Image (cartoon, rainbow, N blue to C red):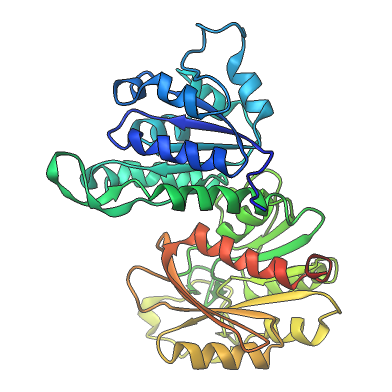
Length: 401
């Protein structure tokens, strides 16, 4: 049975040539059993007729904050929705939503809801690739908004390129997936590590790595949006969602202490941090002076947090590790999976410029303890985080029953 059956869906339609495809999205959701309430922006009515949506949807079209019998239509729509889908979502809508601007019924409804939101952007290639649009999408993703990325194909005016609205069937499938997922991590305690540790050489200098913490933060944000109680142990000063407990650390030793003190109380531990394998054995308490010549720095290994967690792992606990590699990705990830007693390992090739360290995208191979292998193509790190948490849910004892 479709996850849409019996669910109340607000379908937002923005002004763009792709608005005609929203008619098919509406019809498909109604056919799947959803109660669809269409909300059209003023610009959308330049491309599609209100009568068409009113005839196909479960209720008449709404277009205005003020020309309605209900004095507060956005509040009613936002509170009653099980899901809000915006297709097409224009650059204008994405910018206003990211900035918290509510100057029409659709944007006001988006800000007046606690329901999950799915946006399907559509625009010309140049607009889609603009830094401002991508920044706004990154902001929305961090806040838990699901995105159906556009496809490459024919655009308005005879152009061809990326930015074409996703196929209606794909949008409806994504809506079903969002509703099926729901708060599937409610009651689950998730511990996430993020960032690269910093090992002191002297009072000023450190040994560190290029990890930005973006993947770990994405996991924490996705887990929290799906109802988990999340603790984030991080070396990064970036803010996290207010419902996430944040523990700041700096060195591998501090991260080990923070993680081991909390791991037993958590059902899931996702080790996304890039923890140093070595540290200076005798860091100087003072700044080393260049005039004294190049120092010889003797290194010693740091404690292996993943291995210790594996040894201490309790029944039912799920351990997820990351393997940042520059070659033999699958083989090296498999070794880590076995040696650390992990349930899942996410391997990624950090030598790729569009994946790994300090970028918003990633591609990965996910191995599990039962021999499963899943290759994930280039996706936003939030999407990879969602894929990882989907795998985690399937491994949790109470979820698997």
